[in-house]
Length: 218
Image 1 (cartoon, rainbow, N blue to C red):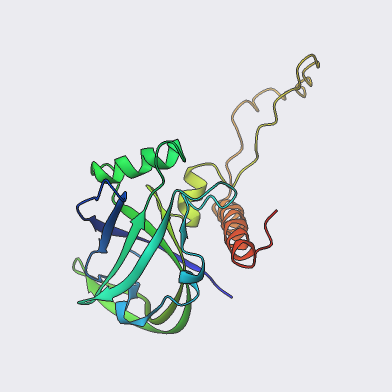
Image 2: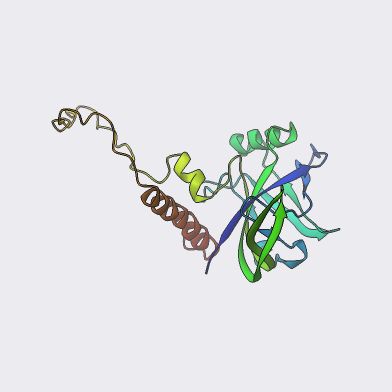
């Protein structure tokens, strides 16, 4: 099953300090940079509401920073009511809550499985964009984000490349291999290879989310 992630701007309503909740209202449906459009009347929330946790930046290994008390579509816009833990319960989640409340954050990423869609062409900014018009979609997640969770963003953040492994304390560092004269410059990564690495990293995120829904995480 293909899971699609889209970042949407939301208007954060007046926060209730006593319950630490606010309503987030998605902007009116518009065609995004990929030429895609999500029809708000096509949302299916049934499975999401069985476990309506809201993670930070698609991090499913860490505790969620909020939960959705309600999700609905009203006047053609997606809305949900988020509730955040107190600072005593989870200090990091309290920071995220205050960043949304202060207007420093305003985006959320929605992850969904398309149920019905069609190819559509739209005129955007004086040019024609061909993308997907999602007619019906099952909501799988809502995540607090600052950057989009697409392959290009993962590459930019370095999530698709090799990772640095620190040398254990007391151990001698592994000597670097001898360099060939004139080979100081790092080799350029082929765009298709970089995209493949990013797609693999995104696949890991999606698989983790599915395991979470199925209760298979340790």
